[in-house]
Image 1 (cartoon, rainbow over the protein chains, first blue to last red):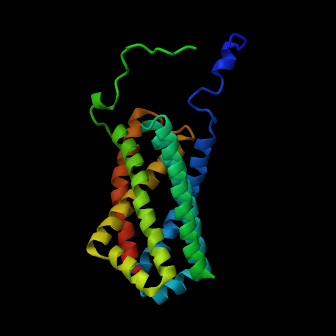
Image 2 (cartoon, rainbow over the protein chains, first blue to last red; image 1 turned 180 degrees about the vertical axis):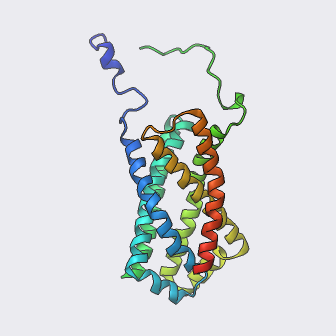
Length: 123
Length: 131
């Protein structure tokens, strides 16, 4: 310990740790979602309550399939990073790590499930 | 090591001491809507998976989402989405360094709250038309 300078002891212990990387990810995903959201809303919402065959045929088309797939991927990556900020504010210690890992797992499982559903209808 | 004993120093005032303001409320709403939208996103994924699985699975998911309760949840989700979208655009705008003054933060806060309700109504009307 005595051989470490004050600077060396403090380095990497700041609240930022990875600098602005997390913020940049939020900016990229929010900007893309701002564009995707209206496209998704007006392709997805009108299909609620439609007959099953119509829904499957609809998501078999390129535009609805690609928009919905992009929306699912961007949403859950944005969610994964956004919830991490929430957890870091209110949860501490080991529970924080468990909560963040749980959120990451849930995000990928939900994204994979949604993409599988689209792929199954589209291909 | 420094900071081993932080002592019993007074902490700076936190949430409980402040009267609600549009700046704080609009910020808190951003977080609440963003996290609550998980439920909506999972409902959408469930509906899509059901559509990809079988007509009976779809009938169940679609029946619940288009029931009165389901529609209520979806319209609330739509409002949450509209609010979170406007608040997110506000954040992206702030990131450019614009309108950081309190008076503008307050105006933009009200714009998010009022705008989200208007945007929800417009979206419902459009979806109603094209559905």
